[in-house]
Amino acid sequence: MQQTMLLESFFNNAQKDIEDKINQIITDEKIFAILKGGKRLRPLLAALSFKVCTGGKEKNELYQRFLEGAVSVELAHNASLVHDDIIDGDLKRRGEPAFYIVEGVDNAILIGHKMLVIGFNISLSHGEKTAKLYLDTWNKTLNGQLSEVNFNAKDLNGAKNNISADSKFFQFYSNIIDLKTASLFSSACKAAVYEAMMSDALAEVLAEYGCEVGFSYQLADDLADLEKGERIDSVVIPLLTRLEKKSKKNGSLSMRSLKKTLEKSLPEIKQLYLDEIRNHLKRAQELSKHPLIPINQYTPLLQEAPAYIINKMLQEINISL
Image (tube, rainbow, N blue to C red; front, side):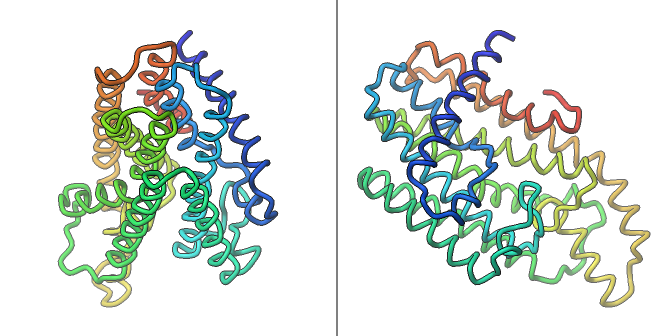
């Protein structure tokens, strides 16, 4: 409990620093509105990685430089959300109308690109390694989105009714999470090591740590949506969605039978999610104890963070791991 309170305090203080830096850097009102209300999970995990590297003994100039890099992470992440809302046709984001609903699709696309340019300019000013990491990560995100869009556009032939047993689908689903979500968590932690001027070997360890946390987070996020009765068209139950389209085309499947299929599959799907979340959490916690990671006052918080972040997400559906 004491460790959890320390972690909460750390995240609260780090978030305030990140918000202050956003206020300092972002002058465009529309971009500022897009950034408003974000959880800042990626830069917060990066802040923890940075402090583990420095032991909290860094000069303020170095910390401010790190915070500047953290803003570039948020810019890229939120730009992807603006574009995702357009692709998915989502009307709401963080309880408010999606940006494209307010400003129009054309403006949303272009403002999203502008955010990416600002983020890239920041990364360029932080050196070649950081800039390449930014580009590589965005390329992964794009590839993940393209795979998802193309997958959902295809017709399904002979789909199995047992959705959760379709191993090819879950292999695809895992790949999407790796590219779209886990890669940004991973890169945020890796960039933090670069900002702290520590070794490339340590950067790889914390990059893998971030990847496992990001993977767990996306699984928990999707599970929460599923538990609340929200059908996730893009990745959680695309097979059901495609069956719906097929049923409308040839009348072979009724909506009643589809709902029964989903109801039967849900317990198995939920258990699969919980098992996978636990596996990734375990791996993240193992990585947090890697011998290359410095031992200081922040190291126990690094070990506590994965379960803390995931339980925060699952709290809304009354699940605790």
